[in-house]
Length: 186
Image 1: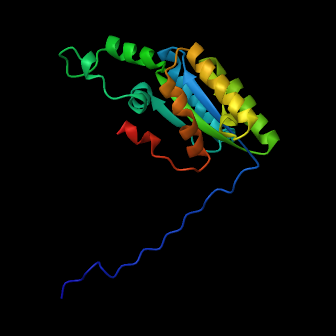
Image 2 (image 1 turned 90 degrees about the vertical axis):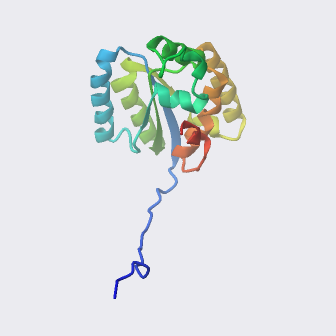
Image 3 (image 1 turned 135 degrees about the horizontal axis):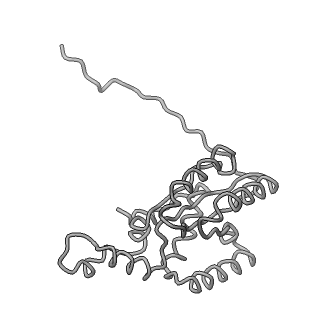
């Protein structure tokens, strides 16, 4: 008699991280030359091993970021099968997206958060722009003020509103709050 897999029971468990005493969020945009990307990845790896990055950073290339903000720009193809370097650069500029971006949650006591921020600034600050934007999720006057400053800062940096609108869902993911905001990448 053939055996059936219908009687198999699988047991699993999930361990959730306890709520940290403090939280912040690091948003980083790589602006250094392509030649420095290897050393940047090595330094990012050092931050993980040093304990300055406790969760794994989400590193996204420009195409992944652009797919969050808009649909594929078929009008920029100009008869080609894929985007030219010039068209991709124009698409990035339209939204203010760097070639590489990463987001990362910072967790711990106030001292641990300070250590993480210092380490991040020291080791990878030379490769691009780092902003700590965790305050923006607070539902108080500080959070509202920070969100206003973040929106103005993004405009000064040449970023589209879509960049700002993705900030809260991105930060929320690292706080353990699910979102379908990033399904757009598909």
